Length: 145
Image (cartoon, rainbow, N blue to C red; front, top):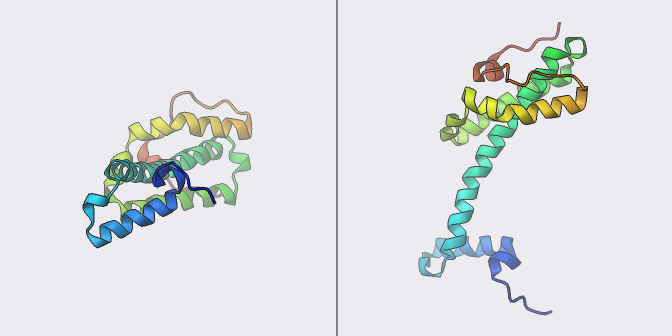
């Protein structure tokens, strides 16, 4: 088997991560790949933020369908909204600092993509400006009629 000339970080990320963990555990700090470790730790934070915002986007997506197609409101939509609200609670339990993304501004930030998702599914014309704030997204009761 030919050995790769690429650094371990590029050739086998999983082995690189295990090696970095072992080196940290052994206190061998001078052997660490600091540059890539810093990048990966920063990416961890972004991934957590992105998971939270993905849940928020799904909530807004389903609220749009719920509000603009009330005749088609389904248990599935209701359960999706509830599941994603629960996911957000779990994310905040693990990472309370993520709460800074639960603002009206971030709802507006995810709105365009949520709107496009809902448009693709329904062919309806949704408002260009976000009709929801964070309180509505996270707390408004969703009940089948």
